Image 1 (cartoon, one colour):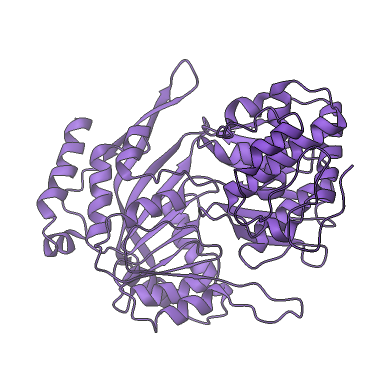
Image 2: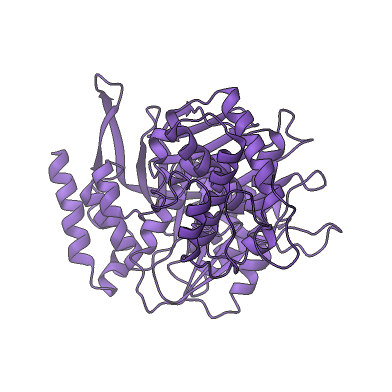
Length: 489
């Protein structure tokens, strides 16, 4: 039926149905009419493929017969096509070539399929060969925040803060593992039995975590924290109700006047999104260096250096930790240092940077309140083996951190900025803070959505007032706080 892959370079040898173009790198469209005269043309050979329609695809549940047909067609395709030559083609050209060959296979094997089923099969196989397989329709949906794959048969998504199961499935656990390996290999990492845990990212910055057997008992577990194609801004967060307009003005001023900021929040509360929003208000002439476990920040400024940690190799060597990155970036003449997520002893180096001339540095920490955030900082410094008196540690924190912004994911799935809190000093051995803005919950509507408002606590002159005056922002800051007080009144 189909010959073996040729050794001379073409994508495939001639099938019975039509000849192949002489050069895969530049297929000659003039040959296609001749092919059509020798055999029935594929149903969609004469028109370009439509863009994938992810949302309707996600709702369809296929039968076992569909997956069996797909498996047979895929096996015939792999026997026919030369993957090494396919890799040299442009993505759209490669996709067209695969579609043509699959159409030929379907015609020759005489599979009974409707036009819509054939189109879905074409798209699925193209995704398997060139993309991320069954994940492609989900990745195309911008409203999905998280994709959670629990083995080949169970795929969940989060939409508008709620988790729901999809009808998407993988052919088997091996296909799922192959797609995970394809994802992590793009950033120079690997996942297999000897290294079953891996953090990686997609080209758009979406965060990926993979844990494979034998650690994952029921098959490979894949979690993707998706980034929206359109980068969010504080003004958009205002429309979503995450912060009031006056609160957003305060945050813009905080980012503009180089306050040292820690963004605190639980998992999925929107810490990285908020950090991205704040960086929009950094002056474009500042040199910014970011340190992350997997690079996901999307800064808009032109002068940005992005650093990423590296896991150890097979021999357990070559690891580059977050602390080493933060230490090194201090030698790179940064004006601002941004740490994607502070998890351990690197917090001490970040605090030192904040306290030694790198004003406006930022980072995120997992915690549930501003007070707990301060406790977590102390705990992480202790994790580093620093034998400093507790008072000394707290003095370092007070001298370094200006503002803590607390993000939270509420029980209805919505995300809110619940605190804008200043660190203002010490009384005895206790760190003193003052809240500038709080989110007050007043109830819920008939649909179970939480109702609340952002209110000023009445602080008319924040601790960073002099800094705001230095940057000419004191009038704007005063107007924002006054407007918030009037709304409460």
